[in-house]
Image (cartoon, rainbow, N blue to C red; front, side):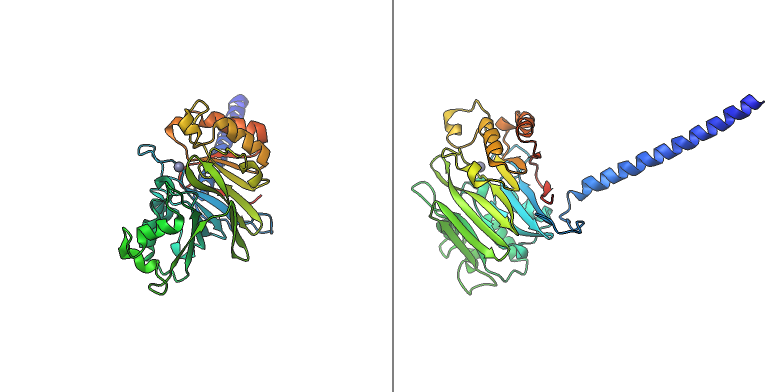
Length: 329
Ligand SMILES: [Zn+2]
């Protein structure tokens, strides 16, 4: 009888423990789900003490290249500060849709910078401007991008050819003529090899010319309250300037468009994975983001991510559309 009673007590204890363990598992599971949902939100205000890059985050709007069937929007990024999207870097195809999905507000943007004027980096620009009609923007908006050459228009010509008085979308020309609408676009073409532009006391953007074959192209650095984020844009880094430009950056976003065994034409436009590892190491950037992923580069993406982590011991991210990466330490 005593044996039966002891057995009964043991079983009762066991079942109670099972309930405790299940409850604990459920708690951790829901905490994990909440945590992963939270990474999709721009809210970054949970940090109490001042620190480097506090409340700064980069969001990927488009992680792809120009392919139609890659299930990614083309190149575009947002730099967030205090839950406000301040800088749009590139405006590739599909990025205006992702901008809305990110809950960003066009009225809040301080500046748009463009790495170059290929469609997968600049085609959505008029869609953003048309979309702004439904907002309440009143501040003028600088759009800064590369100079032109015999193949490509300058940024000023690009904006004018699209939205000038004789442009393809001339119905938007009130945004390019001073005093004709609630705000005016201020296009600027970068003509010097190195360029610097202070947007306001806490935000500065700078650029260097990079080699993207015959296409005028820029790498951009965004400095916000002393926190630096560098975007390589498309380049073959022929002059090996990117690592130095991104020296000690809090984040370096590089474009992984080709594999190591790509052909000469592709290598004249883009960096190989071997170059990306080298640049990640030499730059000492604190975080690396692999973006502009194409079908030809996606096969080696995980191996490249692992190789960069092994070489740098810094976080490495494979970009996905709408991914939000906080920079607070
Ligand atoms: Zn591209």
